[in-house]
Length: 426
Image 1 (tube, rainbow, N blue to C red):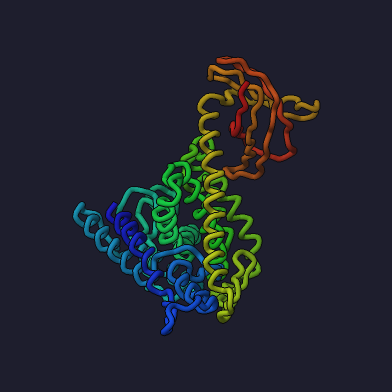
Image 2: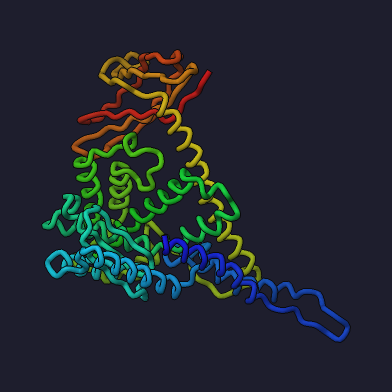
């Protein structure tokens, strides 16, 4: 809570900073002169650097009111408070042993091939039952012992630990802590809808998916199997039996099956970057790779001031639009799933007479359903291997059940998990 208050105050104060960078207009004996448009544009270019600096990963301007020095200081302040509270409750902080040694060894290898090498990177281990790791930005990453104790990461499986660490390093490299606070804090003033919990979950979910993809690149560049991330999430999905339906629509991380999908696809693309040990061309690859190609840096040209500010605003607005659409879809799906659900599934004939799935759908609402859409997840050995949509025009009376038929794909699967995603009402 204290950290969120500090970030919000910082964001509000930082908005005023760019105004001081704008050039004053020259005056003459006869009074004020007409504005020099190029001088204004150059001033805007310099001013926009305070709120729209170049993104360290993409090279594009990004809406961020938190300078790097302040990001580092706030992260260190957060760690000092977090460590103090942990010790006060009797939790061990950075206990010596193989776990801490392994964390820091892998962390060093990953940060050596990551963006933002100038940061004072540091990793800590804290005794806590929660199976989690997190970052406060500024190069700080904290691993909780519950990550091991829960079985999410095995002590003899360094690649799974590397996948977790790479994910947190990617959050820092992508500026997620400061940009998230910038948009949800400052952007929340401009767009009150940003305070909606479905919106916040959608916004955070997109950042989590970005970090999942970039983490796989870091694994490959460090000489670690990039598929280790997909294997980690496959094991977690199987062990914890997490699914989109059980995760709920306020979840702010990709559910584990989706993470398998994301990281497996990214691993396929970055596989050529993996060498024995650290890739000697890592820095060049960071600037030009198949996942996040970096926009080239160029000297100022007339018009760049407007262009940089506009690019940052447009990118932020596009993210806002995606989050808003996801917010609306999540809210609608949550409402639909609360009233209409699949209560039985078995093999049978499909709508075209071929192999299909037969589903019993219950309508618990007081209105008539006249159509619905479902997502069918095909699972094999704990991993999502195929995902498809099924649309049905069917009338389901209030508080009654109807049979719906969907086409069965020729995919080997241990189970098929249906989920109602959209309902139309009469």
